[in-house]
Image (cartoon, rainbow, N blue to C red):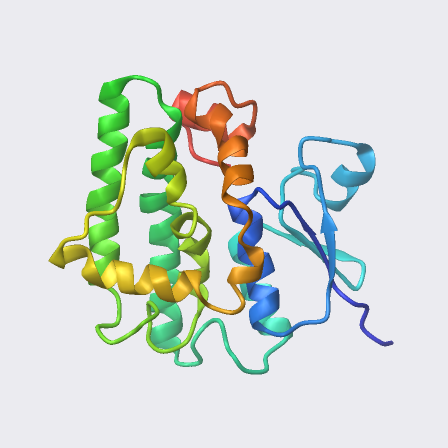
Amino acid sequence: MAESKPKLHCAWFCPFAHRAWISMLTKGMDFEYIEQDPYNKSPDWLAINPRGLIPVIVHNGKSIYESHVCIEYIDESWPSEPRLLPKDPYQRAKARMWGDFVSKKLIPPYYKFLVKQSPEEQSEGREQFLANLLEFTKAMDPEGPFFLGKELGYVDIMFAPWSYRIYILKHYRNFEIPRTDEYRRYHVWAEAVKNHPCVKPVQQEESRVLADAKPYAEGNAKSELADAVRKGKTIP
């Protein structure tokens, strides 16, 4: 039986969904993009993903969700070059470890800085984000320009949607990544990611992104992510 064309249920504003979108473009896949409103928890949508979150890949009638799982599924189901995860077992494990670092050590303080309203909590988020970003930077391949070397891969895609939207923090929190020697390698990485031909099409108009982020910055966003951050719980 012939394989069906994969469908990507995505949303222009969602950085988690961008991970799957970038991955599909990087692999040169023929896929159908479906703009999905994840806030509309209709029975039809929940039948595709019981959690009601994006991204979701529907392939051969089956749903694959969780953004990091989507990246791996794409790489394994379409194994042609370029590979998103290295073939070498150690390098592949290293990529997964640093992808996990992004999920646990970069994304949470980013949102703490953006969503929390007290100056004390914002300062805590800022300092945690900067310290963890420096650790992330020090782990990068020294030549790069990407995290593990010359090619865009899993770790890059895991953090890319936040790096190319860092202007959100500049606009709402007057924050920029320091232009110092210790962060120089980060800026090389960020520029390479932002200008990659498979990342550029995913990026949205800055004014539109800032308008979408405004409720988060003002502390009144109505989403599972914002609720989790406000309550100090794990981001869904």
